[in-house]
Image (cartoon, rainbow, N blue to C red; front, top):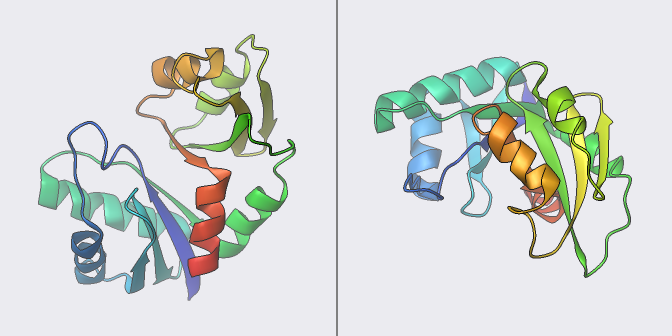
Length: 168
């Protein structure tokens, strides 16, 4: 068994509300062990033997409960720690540090082709992105994520990921 982080895409924004207590119960009832939720933004930590299988289990349980597909990215705590440790850009008060996770093959490569003044680095199966504060949605990368990766990515602030790791 490993500790696996589950990152839900598009919950608690845009009309889909998944309360932390409900998410804990739903994931536990789906057979995922020792469920913890972190913040109210679709982050959970579970015990599972396989991160991808845990994500698929969570997706199936969420779809059954909410009647629509809610995509989930699964990754071991150790793999997520490596992603956070590898964040290549300076963190300051003028920028928001993001990591974009792929839910479908090839999507990050297409987003990484965006011509942008923002700092952006494709690193294996994640996209590191430093964005000027206040311009996430109207920046070239933000627009590309919405256009190209709307249903195929989930994005987290690096600070949120650190809180998830601390809860793990």
